[in-house]
Image 1 (tube, rainbow, N blue to C red):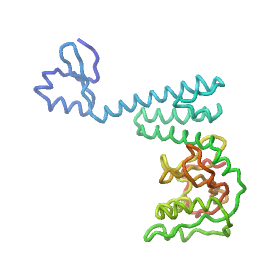
Image 2 (cartoon, rainbow, N blue to C red):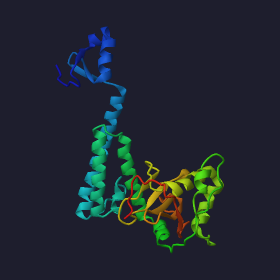
Image 3 (cartoon, rainbow, N blue to C red):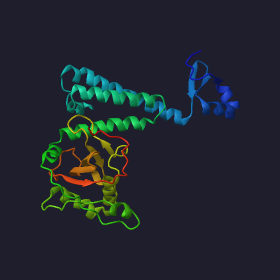
Image 4 (tube, one colour):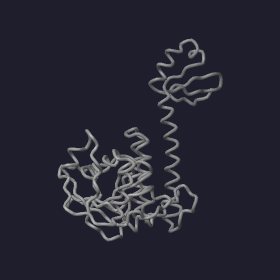
Length: 285
C-alpha cells in the first residue's frame, strides 16, 4: 500500500463512508489520508489547500527571481526583454542585494505563516514600481526641474471630513503662475474632489505612513527618500518628505509611469506638514 501520508491519522474509504463526521472533524484541524486499495488521497481544510497553492506559486516566483538575478545580473548581463523579471535591469548589484534581502525575509515570514502571502507580493510590487520610476524619463524631468517654493492648491473642504486638520496647515509661500504641478493637481480637484481632499490630508499630516500597494518609499539609490502614492484612476503622486525641515516636496502629479506619460509636472511644490505627524518608516537620509 502507498505510504504517501499527509497526517498522523489514516482513514479508509469505508471509514469516510460510515463515520464521515468523525473524519471531517479530524481533517478540519490537520490533513489526513484516505486510503482505497492501493491509492491514497489527502483530505484537508479548504484554507490549508489555498495556502498550499499560494506557497507553491510564490515559491516558483521566488525561484524565477533568484535565477534571473544570478544568471543575468550578477553575470553583468541584461535580462532579456519579455522575461517576467526584465524590470530588474533597472537596479545595480548593490540594489539587487538589498532587494534579495527584503524579498527573502518577506518570503520566509510568509512561508512560516507569520504574515499573509499578499505581504510578499506587496514587496515585489513596490520594487517593481520603483524600477518603473527609475526608468521613467518623465519622472527624471520632474525631479531635475528647478524647485519653486509654492503651496499645493488646497481642495475645497469636504463637509464633515478633513476640515479641522486642513485648516491647521500653514502656507508660507505665495503661488507662482504657470506652475505645472498645480495645473496637474487641478484635475483630481475637479474630477474627484473628496478623494483629492483625502490625498491632500495625507500629504499634509501623514506623508511617511505607508499603506501596502498604495503609499510606499521608492527602493533604489536614484530616488532614495522619495515616496510614491498610487491614487485613484491610475494616477500617481511622487514626493519627498524632509523630517528635519518638516517639509514635503511634491515633484510629480499625473498618470502612471508605465508607459511613460507626458511630463505633466516638471516643477516642485513645497509645503509643511504638522509637527504631530507620525512617521512609521523613513528612508530619508
